[in-house]
Length: 347
Ligand code: NAP
Ligand code: G4F
Image (cartoon, rainbow, N blue to C red):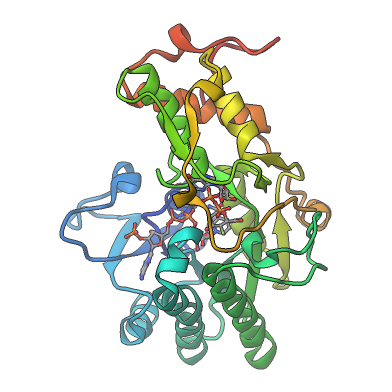
């Protein structure tokens, strides 16, 4: 006979990762509580398929208004919900935007994490805490980056996340909390925000094919990233929270590719030459850039048995295909078959 249903609180539930994590937790029979921000127009599009009317019985998804800048709300929420697991995914997560809004980014991404840790510490130290740490913290540490690499952040976002990382470690060491950091390298999906470079490119491919635009303007094409598939990475978050001891672990694909390569593959997937459609606009360059990320996830593989399931070319095709469908185009009619592979990559 199974015990009482487990409760998880997910901040950032309306984001890319929050939506996949909510799906995973519901699938695993959790009662999922999500923190959402009040806005004048509803922005729950990524979790609408999970939504349940507040009057429904046996609800599995329960949403609460709040903000990471508001400690009184976070304290009350932890006390009211009394989750067994807290996943802190909420963040101003755009690196370029963090240069324009450094104080806000520090408040939400850095202090916000401390507020949540402190609420747990005072309410119920048995609550487990996952912090969405990031490869952006490595900054200009040369690849491959692992748990043993130092942090040399190159953006207000990266610096705020380094603070959050160390506060997570500190609450673990000082008060014995089960508080862990997942140091995740870039992960993408059809739910990726439209202003991150992968989605910007795949959406542009679809819009160009639909005749809605002719070109896409990008910044640094030489930057190298280690790109994986988001659902693999939320599985990593959950696995970390089931461990006997809290750990800090890197999750990555282990490969690195330039932005140029991503664009080349995305346009090639529909038989176009990327150079005919990609233009460079210096407005998208950053004051300081992280040049090259490539993660070494051997510790996660060894301890958790975690492996990424989607290759780089598959990821590009999944995203192109989804954006073509969103534009009303049929991928099977417009996508070029990769050598030896299926015309479409549906997941
Ligand atoms: P995302 O799509 O940008 O989602 C961010 C989430 O945070 C959204 O739900 C957003 O709400 C919420 N949020 C922002 N400011 C908030 C505030 N002041 N109070 C409450 N909620 C707030 O990000 P993601 O790609 O899913 O990433 C999830 C987490 O992992 C983030 O912490 C990110 O920094 C980190 N991370 C991401 C990657 C990656 O490659 N995706 C890699 C490493 C780490 P709205 O929907 O209302 O905006
Ligand atoms: O897609 P991006 O904006 O992602 P970035 O900066 O790597 O950050 C993402 O991954 C981090 C993990 O390492 C997360 F922590 C963070 O929250 C976020 O999810 O940019 C990727 C690369 C950069 O080098 C950028 O300079 O693409 C380059 N780029 C080139 N043209 C562009 C563009 N980035 C954006 N957003 N838009 C462009 O037009």
